[in-house]
Length: 483
Image (cartoon, rainbow, N blue to C red; front, side, top):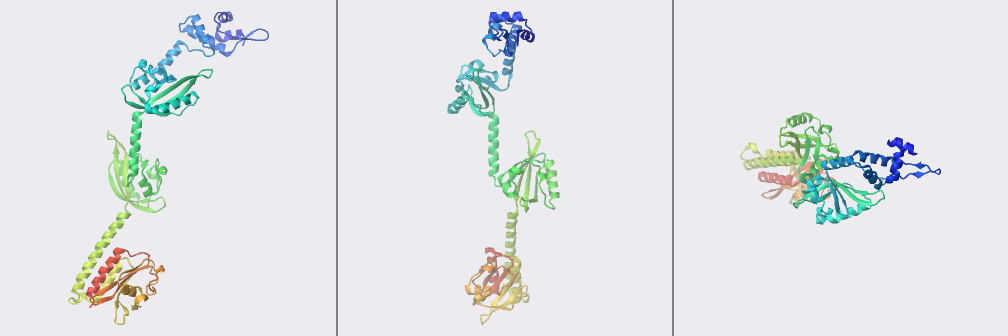
């Protein structure tokens, strides 16, 4: 631009501009082929900087000298410098500037954070603030800054004047002059010691909850799932990442379970503990009967924050309860039938045939069998059915390996067939066509083997050791009753 344009844009007369150029060397215009001066935007900035500094109280000579020595970088005015300093000093984040491990600037927040005055802090090396074991990593970071690397925010430890250590989250950036020379780095950091400790404690708590064998779920006060442990994943079938953040109400409900869920949610809204048993849908579409134990979670002020739910698959407990119930029923049946066997002959109501039929019926019912029968050995080793449930069994079966009963008598021990289809020890043709599993125990009397007690089922593996033990007890009762 020509000097007239420069005068118009800066508000300084052309003659004054020529005087500043001669006297202070402030402007260094290029010349056209015709010898006319040509100015740039940098000259506009220099004149503006001089006027600002003079306005702030500097003499013209001092202002011009300062701008001229600054080159193309126009220095800030005193007002701007003071404003920048006030901003840096009032930040709630610590700011430090250093070069080659020497501190050149620190704000009040940094000094307070480290427990010293600003003057004391500036007498230290950057590495004085870093625990010795962390210095190799700090030196590596400094080397990267010299190469222009800008590391992502990172945590580091700093040592305070009293010897304690704090954890700070740091953002560090390198500084270069206009010629590309490294001028140091500026670091902005904040104390995150308490936050990191709390996060570590939270991680520890989550790790403990994940290790708990019980299925756990945390739900916020608005019904959003906030946490689910590994045991809950295994029980429910859903993955935690697919569940956390979703409302509890967004999951399917088993038919008939809605009233129970409504009751549970009413207690949850009221902040009350609640225990119940609710059928729960598994991810694979099956149903898992679960016992829920819900407890409210409150803040130290008593405000309701949410609730913790512990849920447990009750199928195993039901199985165990059913086993205990069946065991008690079997023991009771053996006791009653044993008493009747002892009374056999003296009480017409306790006749031998009646006792045999009651024993066979007890075996069928309490073993979950489809069929049961008592066979007796006759003089020609023929096996004759004395009692059966249902009573449509054939009158006799072959002895020895020709039948399950004959084979048990021959072996003098209990015989259990888990799957009739794979049985090769004896002929299975005497069993009912629908039979898939069976068991037989010999009946011993005073003279030796008197017969066999046999049960049959339409499912494979229907008879376990406890069932066989029950059959032995019934066989003993029968053996005591046979004349």
